[in-house]
Length: 440
Image (cartoon, rainbow, N blue to C red; front, side, top):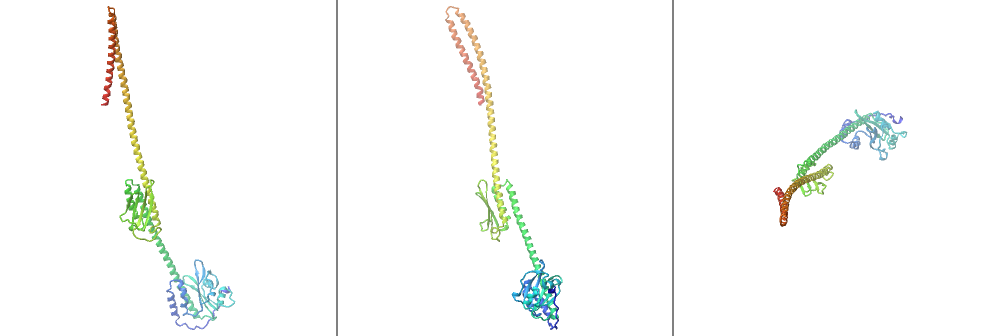
């Protein structure tokens, strides 16, 4: 690989580096104060200028997640000679060779260099390039390059100074990377903590909402509580279910009935849920905040609070419908029971009347039989009397003057008529006596 093989370094006399150590310490102190990589790369050239002469400086950094190299800083070359900032494979060019081998490299730039990086540097007017690994004992970071427009070789003293400067820059980059990594971790942890706190807070809010639903369901099932008491207790439990219960008040309206918590007033921060029962009666549940609070899904109210209020309104409407239906069923059962009782009384009266009618019929038949027997007996007696009169008439007829017989016959008929009339009156009188007793 001729284009990746470092050229031979030409030694020159050490010009003397008086105060180099202080310069390195100052470099370490100054660049160690930067907290971001962009800030460090922006100010690095002015910190390097007092240490050693150069016409251009570049830093190529390695991106571990993608395993690619990117030109992160280029100073000293015209903008039209700076290559586009785009990732390159880790084995690409002299920068890739130094990164992988962790060995320094010095190149004389000539027209014969065919590699694009070398050709671009030569075209920009540079004649030498020193490539130094940016690495620490823990990690490889990239490549540090110093270019000059003269072909003079770099002295050993400057070579050592540049290598120390590269190590200081590498430590500073590593430090900043670690700080940035720690900051990202801190932010992630803070975000996770915030999410956890938010989850706990949201869980607490959901617990409050579920508690309100449970309490409302238990209250709505209690048939011992009247409608007025039901509305009052629903209004009481509503503020506790909301995000800011200390400034929350509630009102429940159903038809002409309205129940409000003691501190309820109309405010701009109101949320309501209307409902209507099957009989057409309208109602509403309302919650107000007495002071402003941060904006949420619906003013200061969360989306879950809207869903809670809608659910409670549906529960109240269903409970009122159920109570009305049960009351109607009970009224119908009462009416049916009363109708059944009246029907039983009518049936018993009919049976009694029929029984009395049967008894009167039997009594009438009995009286008729008695009457008939007596009439027959009296008739038989009358016949006997008639026969006796007829016999006496026949005897009298044999006597002189038959007029006596005719007179006797009229007398017999009168007697018979009187007997029949007397029997009829006696029977009628006897029949009237049981009737008078029955009326009494």
